Length: 296
Image 1: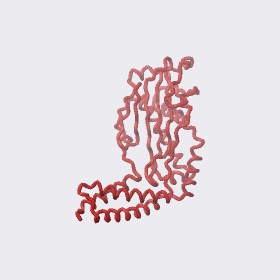
Image 2: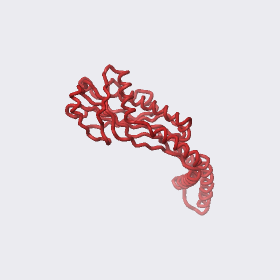
Image 3: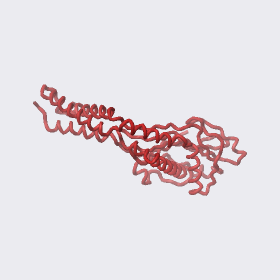
Image 4: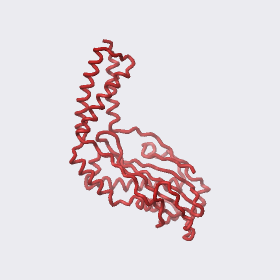
């Protein structure tokens, strides 16, 4: 039987690869779009801030139950064994090799099943955590919360007066809203803030989940509706297990949501009104932020 130690190493490395990707995601660097040109900033005049009128998409990644975790772990470990074997350059099928791979895959399935069962969460704990988290988010007015936080941070960090507007913003992402009637209120520019997504995200059977929020900011000239600046920004913050987010009546979730809004508001003000060099902050080096510039 032609079977080298190299083949065994490749198979075992497949285990490592699978384990490494069950609970953790690779962070990738992002660069913000250019901030509005200085000549644009100089002509903003009085800025009113409006919030969107649609609820954000809310998604909570829940852990698998013990049964599902067992099946996933068993299948994943067995598959990794077979894939690791057949992709090894010196691999070839023989009766002995076939029996060896089947035996090793069987052992992997048992090990993976045990690991998946241990990692899985009981239905009772998962249901209780879900109810607590849902209740904590039920009364949150995400759009108004984000608007008010932007106004507060803007007043703290700039000399520009930001005015809270009761006018309705977009009822869907990307909807074009006319603000020309704001001229009577001496509003020159509208800062439109929309929370698009909110949730707990992660990969695996019971992974650490990051609280994430995605918002869209648009600067719009009130007189003619011209979009001066448009971007999306996603913040990914602290990580906890799903059940841990629900402890103390979801207090960790509430605190992280407030922190998330504050950090997003700081970034919005920084990008929109202040001089800022993308990519230099500690948050970017840690991979907390991602951004997408939208050209008009």
